[in-house]
Each structure stands twice: as C-alpha cells, then as structure tokens.
Image (cartoon, rainbow, N blue to C red; front, side, top):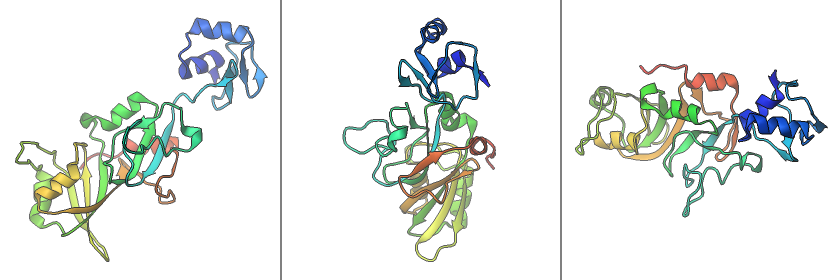
Length: 238
C-alpha cells in the first residue's frame, strides 16, 4: 500500500507541495471518487486522475515480438518504429526500446519507460546474455565455435567478447544458436561473417532467462510479470 501523494509524485512531474494543493482543491480522484486526503493509502493499480487527466503507470515493461521492417526507435522520419505499432493503450506512455534489434531482425524486444532498468539490460558491464537463432547458409565448424568462444576480432580492430555458439537441428536451412553478453552493432552477423557464414534470418529468443512468449504473433506485445522481469537478470553468462 502507498500514500496517494507518493503515487502521484512517482508518476508525474508535480512537486510534493503542488500535489498537496491539488488534493486539497478536490482535483484528484481515484476510481472516480474525489480524494481529499494526501496520505490515504492505495494498492497502486487504481485509476488515478489529476484535473481530469489520468496519470501514467510509474513503470511499464512490455515484451514485444518484433517483426521485420520496423526500427527500434521512438521516432523515425523514414521507417515505422516499434512505438508506432504499439496498441493505443500503450502509446503516449513514454515507452522506448530497452536495447535494439536491427530492422530486419525479429524476436524478443523489451519496451519500458524505466531508464534505470533499460541501462541495466544494455550495459556491457552487467553481462546480460541475449540468445539468438540464425538461419544460415552453412553450419558452424568446430573451429568456428572455438573462435567465437575465445572472442572474435575483426580486421577493423573491433573485438567481440567471448560468446557461446552451437549448431541446431533443422529440417530446412542450417540453424545456429548464438549467446552474447554485449550488443555491438550487427554483432551476430559480423561474428558469423568472420567465420564465412552468411545469415539469412535472425531472431532473438531470450534475454537472460526470459524467453519470447510463443503465443505472441509478430508485432504483438504484452506486459511482463514481476517474475519475468527477474528472469532477465537471473541467468549468468557461461
């Protein structure tokens, strides 16, 4: 349970003194009822309005199954963004992608309005692992797997941290699983290209121990549960 004035302070830009004045003036309502007591306590999932306008959630965390052709940005002058394809109820909530996937890469993307949470996912120092499945034109050799594990260095001088790689069973194209703990530009594609392997399709299926919900169609999203959020930070890089 939280005080009404604290809930409003956490979710808006009002100062504490402004909030107290708003509450006393009768402009704050909870589930349609005017509230005049600043320290009245609530669970936190009530519908709260200030001057008739609903306040947003303090923090929001969504899982999206990102489709191809959509860029991981809040705004873009050329392409449709992941914010553009959100359901209306999630728009204008200050959401942004926590990390990025290339325009032609699909799969698990997290959107949030929590900057600290996003930083924890994206920071290389946190070593949050991301697992990708790539359709390729050939399988990994034993030598490729060792090179990736040791850390590949490109001719440009870019060095990738050691990663886990494996060949996966497939009835059609070759499939490769790659687990990385950093997120450099086109990293998976560049690592495989250095091994002479071309990527046909690339999908991210996990961040930490959080796996993409198989029930989500391309472009769909849903809220993460508290347990799922914890899974992101549970797994340790091998």
